[in-house]
Image (tube, rainbow, N blue to C red; front, side, top):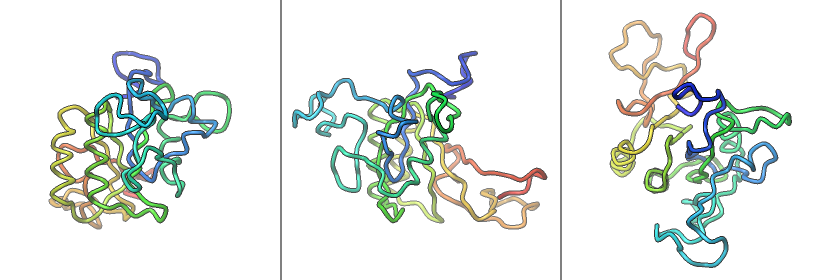
Amino acid sequence: YGWTQNGKHPGGSPDVIIAVIDTGVDYNHIDLAGNIWVNSAEIPDNGEDDDGNGYVDDIHGWDCVGDNNNPMDDNGHGTHVAGIIAAENNKIGGIGVAYNCKVMVIKAGNSSGYFNNSDIAEAILYAGRNGASVINMSFGGSQISIAVEEALDKAYNTSILVAAAGNDSACNDLSCKECDFVGVSYPAALPYVIGVMSTDKDGKHL
C-alpha cells in the first residue's frame, strides 16, 4: 500500500502514515528522523491538547506504557521495525521499503518487550483516530483480548492492519493439512488483519 499504489514512486508517498505499534521508535535516528510523523495540529511543548484528541503534546505519537508524549524506544525492536518500513533513502545505513512514508510512533511494549493488552488496545485506537493509513503490529500471541479485538474492529474502518504471523514456523490456518505445525498468532490470525511471515527458498515457513 505504501509503495505501489497507483503507479507512485516505489518509495511511497509522504501522505501515507504508517503507525508502528511497538516498543517505541528512536525518532531522532539519522535514518528515521526525516520520516517521523508530525502532528501538525499540536503546538509542541505548550502543555495543551491543541487538537482535542485527548493527548497533550503528542507531536510524534504516544507512549501508552508510560502514558506520556515521549514514545522513545528503550528496547530496540520498534526502531528496527520502523527502519524496515521507512528508513530514509539518504545513502546512510539501510533503506526502508516505503522510504517516503511517515512513521507514527506508538509505544505499547516496555523495555523488556512485553506488551500489555490495554496498552495495545489504546495504541490501535490512537492510530486509527489520528490518521494512520496502515497500522503495523510486529508482535503476537496465542490469544487475543476482547479490548484489542474491539479496537481492531474500529480501526479496520480507516486503516490497513498488518501483524506478525509469529516466529514459530507455524501456519496460521487451523484447517491446513499440508503444514508441519499449525498454531495461530493473534492479531495476525484475524480475517481482517494481514499476517506477515517469512519463508525459505522452498516455501517453508521460517
